[in-house]
Length: 342
Image (cartoon, rainbow, N blue to C red; front, side, top):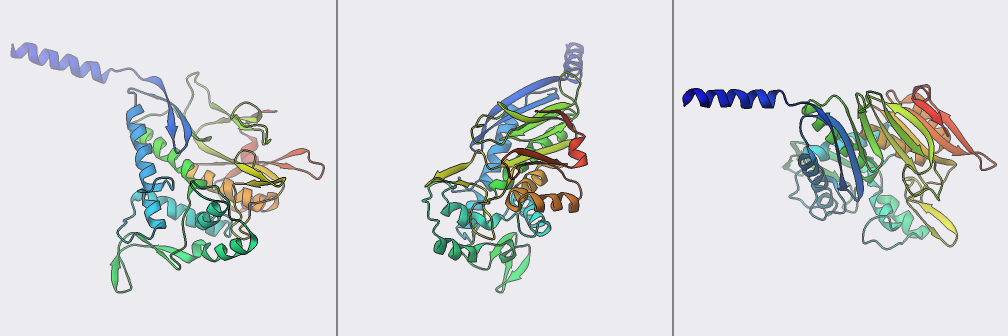
């Protein structure tokens, strides 16, 4: 009987150790958008990934009243920052500094004024916008860790110059969520995957056909509202992340004027220039996402300058010339990835 027990145990161990890897496909909804994940592994991680994204929202979603970022915005003195918040804050400050303020997560009051956050009423007259600019600028906030502030020990807290300062990480959060899911797959030993959340993505290894992953960049036209329906270009990707920001999906028209969701932190108004979309390639999606937004705020010439100055990023920029025709600016690194130009 003991012999049979050990024989059964040995067979069980062999069965699990010899479990063959296969490609899994997972899709779902998170952060008000969809996600699609393809990876090679031994198990289906749909439940674990769903939980990761729920935990992410509990930290960084401005649409969840109980999230850490919402409590920071309400100046809740009891809130303690978690590792996700700390990481996204540090990256935001890094890109804020390197982009000379083009990327700024303190634009939340402006985003609210323009009606791009939940339960907000549009209030964007010039006088009001000018008033709100007093609460914008990452130089007006800091994160402290085990430091004395007003004779109190503060551990992982946000300190604001003005309590009316609020944070909005929507311009970087989806890219970061891609990284978190990818890092989970890395930890589980997956060598081949494509993680896509809300259009931001990260690729590793090869696809099920043993080739590099093919990704499409949407043509930045107002009528192109379905992702993947009308493509500007197709790229081959592996070992990199890609994020695209544009002014052709999230916008509203008022009195015949188009207002995009990308807010210029210097003027307080939606960014207005001839740059139609910015696709940024980087190792981490959090980096690509942040710089894609910085480019859309800065416009074509400032974007070109950023792409020259910042190490580790490449870009594919679509803009309109003086006649309204589509033009493309591509860095050498991004150009190598292009396999089909539409």
